[in-house]
Image (cartoon, rainbow, N blue to C red; front, side, top):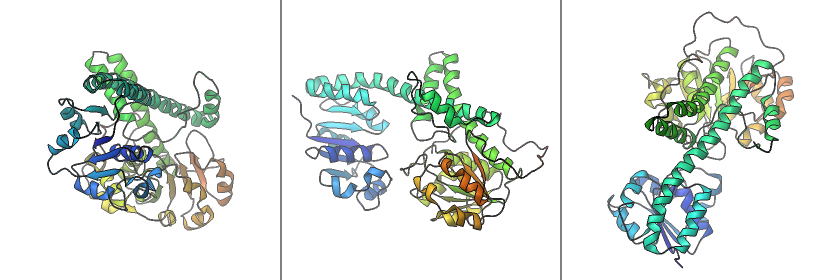
Length: 424
C-alpha cells in the first residue's frame, strides 16, 4: 500500500498555508514543505506575525512548526525540483498545476477538491500504484472542478435568494429571519445559508459562479448563463440597496458626514477581505463624499487601503482614500462624532460594545445600520438609548425623523447594471 511520508505544497497563500498547517498538525509523522516565490509572505509565515488571520492558527508556531517548513525557492523552476523529491504534491496556484501536470514521477492533488471528492481521491491514493495515481488524479480534477463550481453556485444562490426576500420583507413589514426560519424547517430545503445580509463575499462564490456563467456562454447556453448571472446581480443589488438606504436615512446626503464602518473582512474570524461587501459599501459611500472611519479587529490597515485604492473602487480619484478614509484601532474612536454606525462584518465583539457610551459621543440623531443582523436581541435597548435602528430584512424604527426626498437622480441607481468586479 502506498504511504505518504512527505508533502510539498506550492503556494503559501490563503489556501496553501492553512491547509498545510492543518495537515502538519493532524499528521505529525508527515514532513510538509510549502514553497512560495513571495519572499515577504514566507518571512511572515515564519515569524510571530502571520500574513493571514484564521482563528485556528493562533497556536500555529508552537503546534506545527516541527513538521512544517515554509520556504522560498531560489528560482521558479526549483519548485518542480523540490516537488519531485516529495511523495505527494499539493498545488495551490494555477501556474503550479500547469507545470505539474506535465511531470510523471509523483502524485499530485489539486487544492480545489470538494470534501466528497477528496475522500474519493484519498481512497484512490491508498489503493493505486504510483504510476496510476497521477492519471486518476488528473481525471478526478475535471469532475471535481464541475462539482466545486456547481456546489458553490448553489450556496451563493441560496444567499441571493434569501436576500431577495429580505427586500420584500422590508417593503411589507415582515421579518426575513422569521421567513428564513420557516423555510429552513422544510427538510427538503434545510436551514443552512439562509442568513440575509449585505451580500456574500470571499474568493470562492463569485469566482465560481462567474466561471459557471462563462462556461455556459462558451457552450452556447445563454439562458443558463443568464440564470446564474442573476445570482451575482442580486448580490450587487443588495449591496447597492443597503448603501442607498444609509444615504436616504441620513437625509439624502452623506457628503462630508462621518460614518463609522465596523468590520472589513468578508466574514468573522478571518482577516480575508477578498470580494468583501465592505469594500463595495465603502465605495458607494465614498462616491457620495462620506468620510469613513473604518475599524476591523483583524484586517491590517495596509490591506484596507490597498482594497479601497484599487482602480475599480477608487475610479479616477485614488487620492480620495487619503482624504476621506481613516483607519482606527478602536471601535469607540471610529464612532466618536459619527452620524452613523454601519456594521458590515458579524464580529461577536460588536454585540458587546458599550452602546450607551457610543450614543453619547455620536451626533444626533444617531443611526445604526446593521448589515449582518448581529444586534437583533438589542433593538429595544438601543432604541431606548435613542438610536435609530435600520437592519436587513426588517423594519425596526417605529418613528423616523422626517425628511424631504430630493427630486434629483442619485449618483448611483439601484437599476444600473453592476459594474465589472475587480480582482481584490
